[in-house]
Image (tube, rainbow, N blue to C red; front, side, top):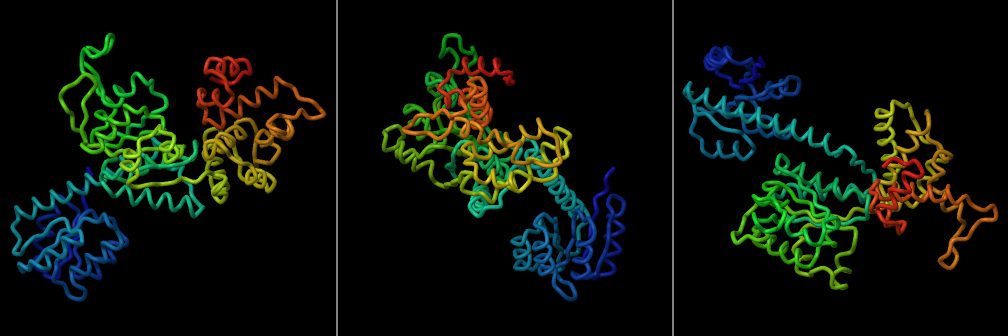
Length: 457
């Protein structure tokens, strides 16, 4: 069974002996007589809780607490004072002390405050483990940034996360990582242990969008659930809702969303009783909402309500500093997955990757590295292995007057069609519906072509 480690910082020999005698049965207790000694111990040893006297020889308990806080924000400290010095107690609480004890110490109060403080320590550690698991589950370690613009976006996300319910608008092309940034905000906020619900506004049928968001009461729909159904907003209560592709939200749903943002409440479809939920709304878009407003497809009042805090994620082609760092990150990832041993990227491959437009952004880069490392053997990635990035362009020649020019050597239509299917899948991040749209194909035709060319579906 784990024994908590408690550091006692006091210069009174009698109190030192008493505390050691009282605490040593349940805890590993260590005693020092000054703030300077306490700081040295805390630098080199694991301590769960520090009992710190305010009046000490040398640096004071308040100054010791300040230095402890500079070293780590998570240290658990309970102050002790022989004087009912309200000003010093207030100062220590502002610096982050969990509680305080007044001498002469009451044994029952001492034990109660220590138990309460250690319960807080335990809870913080459990929370930190949950955070680590969240990072692992949702690939937040994928965030690699060397470019100033991406570092700025991450700093803004970190700042926004400190606010409990500020609405956020994230702009960026498909594949830049808008959902990853949204999850990062959720992860670093006080809501992280509550649900994160992502809704693709463009993928919901126009007849079902309101019931998906706000739910419906029993008997509303023929064939619906007898007991009714919770909507996404209610399911996310306490957490975060990401409205991806917000520009695709239909006008009627935009009105309901605006009402919800203003009142934090909504009526389920077919319902007469208003429901209140506590969620942070993050909206993401790969289109200019200002242009959508001009086109009459997006409400201006909703735009201003969403655009409280705004993060713009630049496309990969505009932050070339990140290409090499992301490539190495994905190499390490796929080395483990495929049991390969790729160790470097050749200069010609780096040059090719820097010149490539990466219209599918980070998602396209990830898929390209995965493809190479699955199909090839190490120890390096070279330009020849990446020729599929430019094959379609070079095989068809340059576009003239909006038409493709067949090169003198001709083309193999089967190979060309297969390559187009592969590139469309890469640029859409494997989303077959989007890939089909890039090629003007229905989802059913897209699946047929994939099976025809032996591509996994």
